[in-house]
Image (cartoon, rainbow over all chains, first blue to last red; front, side, top):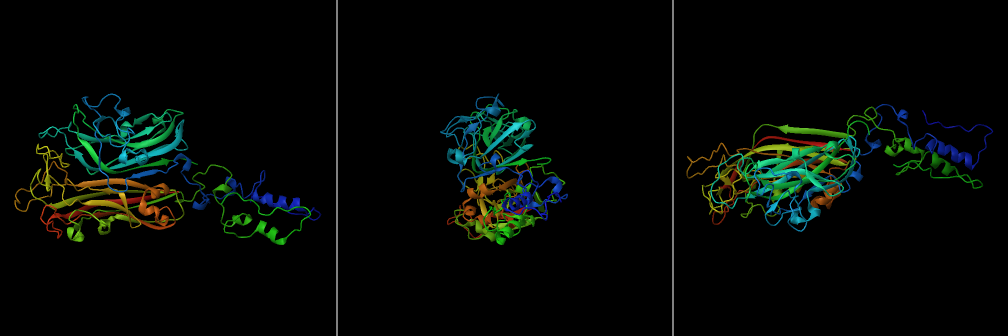
Length: 267
Length: 286
């Protein structure tokens, strides 16, 4: 037992100081080893159970939790924004181009034909957005105390607003699509979407009522020293190979996003 | 508990009370502040800052998870939902929702934890009684080129069904998580048919005949605060100690809004949903 207690011997002075010292010694008031500062060697292997353990996740990194969900009741809104408005295929800087229309762009539906990603947010209110606040700095091969952040999103597709051009289009690979993805924001407010999280769902043959995707944000996704301040979902219309004039605009109601930081090794 | 602060400090000249000496050494308390903490009340703050590694921790005490699944077909018919409003799912419609066995799980949360992560996937197919109509009707929808015909979710010029939408919704501890509902069957026209023209069986190979929902949901304290029906009673949170349930439920109304008056007897509308493979799992995060 490494918690050493010095017994009172015959002839020792018994006064307030000697009593207090004995108690402090067991409690472990510095520099004594005691119950307040148990060393690893004080415990047998596999001795720690759930009551002894800290949370894996430090709340300071996720000040408002790890999940955002909304709205409470179905509120269908049209996200009339195209990734490649006026451009054939995927335009340059498409991963960093966000919509500019609306009071709180790029949050919520733009209210008119817009270009770039939109962040789902009922009523265009940032507080409602499919976005989670994070406060983790990338240092070497960690983000905060984590090796990465697993982010998953799900969006309920109500329907698609069809093209205004009449006539039946052939089903081809360049048919109008709904595009979703996951993005992040740094300490300067710069937003970007992670390419590998992007999913294209063709209106013609692939769309399902739920649009889901996920990604694992790695330290290498964030420049060393930068802060991961937010993660968010994005949505837009688009076409892979054609110039989009009047694309198919997604109409969505519910959405949710969650972020789970993952550790490896000891803590 | 936090670090021990010995409750009684002795002062020279004051009377030494035996009770205070005893309280310093051993006196069980609801919030222990003396050396009695060594009898089962040691917690993380008592650790002297060293890194916890795998050899220190008992298995399963940082996290716990389990999964259930099923593959046998399971059929739900619209007589489960007779009487749903002619205007669709209204009122407390979620009370009619039926748990899907194989996509339902219960679990024990041993102590207050940070979060519960739920994941699931489910495949379904719909059989609906529909008629071949187009833009003036609400039974079959297809992009015929008419301005009022929207893109069909089943495909351009492929009919889809928008009557009596079937809906899936996540329940936790018997309470609906409203934002986690999806209308997945809208567009599954491949099994739809017109009873007046049975030869026109709408078995479109190019349209999706099965709908899948593969999703996840994470519940932490802040999640509960965002959901009104949970926030009013935090004991419903699955992150607190006790047994909890999570399940996906199915509901679809047996009505036809095209009829006059609309029918709610199940003779028309979505009639049958077959649940195929399904799975649900949970992970507790300390």
